[in-house]
Length: 414
Image (tube, rainbow, N blue to C red):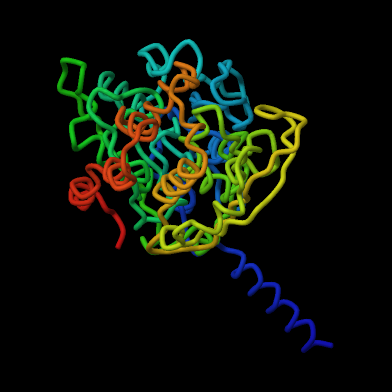
């Protein structure tokens, strides 16, 4: 009986050890050291419900209840603190854990001196998805800009890039195409962690552009441990939490990287209003069996495509059955290129149904949004004119080699 009890204790102990993630994120390490980096400082926290300790405790709650931390306010991006407000909808200020919450997706997109006055340091803990058009990057940029203007240091708690640290894909955002869905000149998939991205933003001088000022913030970083660039999310041992209403799962994020830009055009459903947003692509005028058969599979590493029918509950085709395809994703460490795969998929659709690509039938707002999220005017013009696929491929990778060389300076992990 004594041996059995000892064995039970050992199994429980090893089970606890096994439940620890392989990767320790910035907040895990900050807490492990009793928050010593922010002792005696009034802390402003940029976060939402994706910022969590390894056991799932919200970073905001952890800090609000810690005897070591003086948390004075929380600032949140699009979708609000609980990542539940639909895309594009204004988010109101709030109060959580007894702490005021200021929305940066309201009448303001950048914290002013009034919000920053009460704090000594801005702490960042949020899970980005590694896609340029996702607005968490834009909010981070605005916070860093405001921090530089108001002499507030910024401490970024790092987290993995769910698209992978080696997977760089797509054209850079071109000069003059800056917007809130594309604010810095990086490729569509940049392959950087949020701390590496902040490092790049600060050192490349982008905070100064169009301001007439020489801006650079006092930036520091808590790096992860146990992380390397070849890891996919499944390797990290970390839990996934929804980053927005239409990105409830990791595969939704991967689907967004592949189909999100084309969803802006308004004639192809990308599964919004279903339980697998961004993983479905549909239009009832298309023979999807032919699309699947004729695709060049060499572009689809880590991506499975099969025919599917679906019934959206909201959005495009709500309440109607749609014929299409289902996208599934499996770990691909070195050659995952969802943006490129999306380009190839829609080239195939264009070959089969060229009449869908009539620019006169696309709304002006849809044209504008497609250009903003792709970061160039040329892709829209190319897809909707009689140009060869080779030219589209070239446009969709424009600037990638220069970006790869530049990003080498900012890689914090091997």
